[in-house]
Length: 403
Image 1: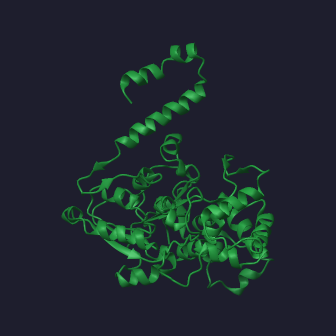
Image 2: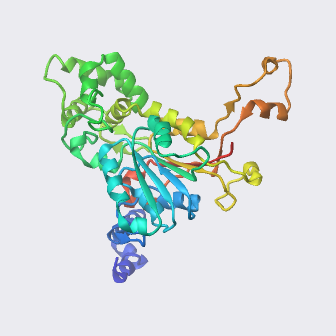
Image 3: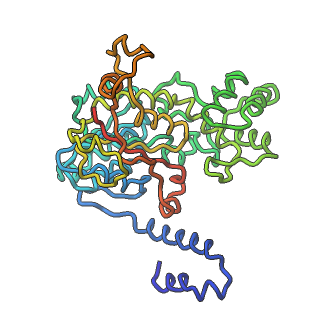
């Protein structure tokens, strides 16, 4: 924004004389600032990587990783490559395993891996195609040993690339086939969202909408979808489903988790996407497996740290960074990262409710695999939300492998 314009907008005299609400003014000013930032975001780094789209909270993740030469990272949701590119932009001699279940994202990773400037800078990108559940096989194929990875990034949900392509059927704002398969046509027998809404019973559809979408009118919507099978042709496009749901809930206003108005079909589309791609089971599985490959911390002082501290200097173990955009995803991530696992080798004596066990005995049974770096979940600031509206519901959790 030109300095002269900024000066005029920031003038209290200008605000008072023209009766502008100051809160509205601040929002407008941040919006203009975001436009200016986005206009200058295309920069070329020494590693030959062009940074266009800025991924959510990328600076916080890179700061926590403290990238150094010789380190290895796994970007488990490569997408458009935003997080991988920001790691490479540190210009450190690192290796990034760029993984994604989407064949289109995988092809983008292949193109990035062939960038000659990346190789010349001593960096390496290894493209991997697969779901979270395929992680062990992919690691074995690429000779990734246990306790050898310095950082893992997981940016959950559908990517901007998938939402922006109407042919994928993820967005309800544009017309396209009711598909929603993140794997694309990699598995021909995998059911689409159209198969789900045109085949399952009202009871099963209602459970999907209620559990995965937290949809208040799940039963009503599910029953209407089933009834429509006898009145109209097969639901096959995003606009057909969105319009049907809009007609059902015409007298109701839909809100998201932050209290903002949204399209009445948003939660149903979210639920279908999660169900079609088995996202919850995939997430739960990989959080149990990925810890195998991260380096454990050796710093006893960090293990005992129990205060909120943004100082990452004392962290020497592998870090996991998980971005979630849905409460159900975040609950699962939180359960794994702050939960306690039970040692399978506990004794029968631990079942005796008459015995009071001391701390040492409890430690023999209960073992923590992760230690959160920040006690509270990290959320984007206002400026980032203005620059990237899709980040508004993002939650970032950072944790270190301790055992």
